Image (tube, rainbow, N blue to C red; front, side, top):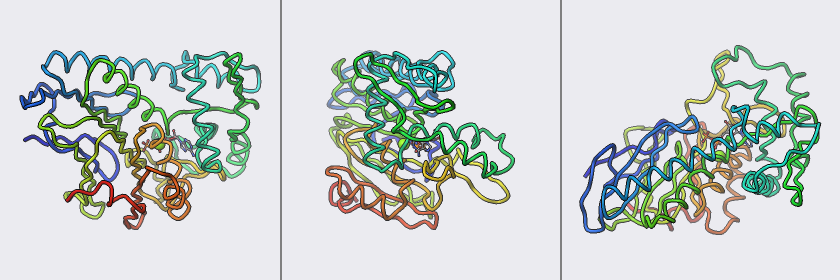
Length: 342
Ligand code: ADP
Ligand code: MG
């Protein structure tokens, strides 16, 4: 049996699938076929795509199609790529509506729904803050309050105008900007799974930089097992979750933060005050949908442990595990009941 750390460089270091997942060209010839895994960098993160199929060639066909799908999505939603539709929308903020693909339009519509659900804790127009809070190592001091106040005025999902008839997106005010950092990887994972399933792959796993979705089971027929590392002891698994057709998504990336004068600033911004969120180290969400899990993980981060937990506990079929800055582990009501397998 081989163990592969699917989680990569994620905070907690910790979600990983154990079992017949193999890296590179490894093949496991078990009852229900073989599995193959490709690890590569996509959307600026470490991705891992696994397929289980009757033979090696079928695995690779599906893996390659899944990867092509992720690359296609990256082109559409990237706000770094000046040629993406997203960049066009951003450049035209306060000027004019931009006609976009139905797919992008729908993604924004779903993002706005999450904003409503979370009372604005999740907001893709947080991105006006990108110009101030830079997490690429260039930020030497905390941005001035006055600059934050100005950028804050440009956040507001209610001012992301969608016109279904013309399929246009219009950011109402000049300087507004949207970004899919908190939902794009989950969406890509969902789509890669859909493409692979469409090719007849009944079992597989896509780990999009810590946003993981698994379907079917491992080649030996056992469920995918996801380990959550104990934040107090990175060498130890805190608990094992057995999943089947579920997404397990973690927010809180230890690699993306800045240290300024001894303080750690996370890359998740509170859209209500324009400052990086404090208090939570990571949030893991389990639900059948990687995109929703992704969006909710970020949302719980912003809402904080009490409001975040209350939100998850009232949503059917969605569970979470919060790790606080002081290393407390807070599970939602039915997390262990539904998923814990010692
Ligand atoms: P991770 O990158 O650790 O997987 P997330 O899924 O939470 O974490 O995504 C964080 C990214 O989401 C940030 O880097 C930024 O691009 C974007 N973001 C930050 N704050 C918010 C927010 N309040 N609402 C929506 N997106 C946000
Ligand atoms: Mg997220």
